Length: 127
Image (cartoon, rainbow, N blue to C red; front, top):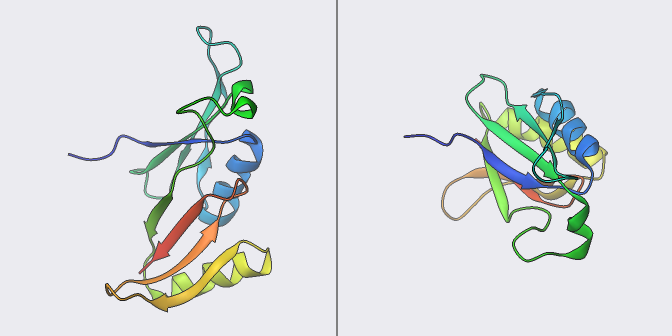
């Protein structure tokens, strides 16, 4: 059993796609425009290795704060190769104003930092 993909609502589809491409070297698929639900557009982001995908989704109703359809998630944890990789990505994100929590070892034993997407969603990068 495995995740097929994780979905993320965003108000800025292109900005979110650029974030994943720039910081995680992800490949980004072409936009899909729903014929059944006018205004719904999504793009799939595939992380290196090809086994993890994120569906970025947007629609004009997000500004209306419709129940169940709002930007983001609580957080997503992405495991990097080692602590040095966490430190390197955290430094890049810090330079760009996206670092929320500096690298540290947590009480449950993870080495992690917390960064933000353009919509403010949290991503834990761990080793």
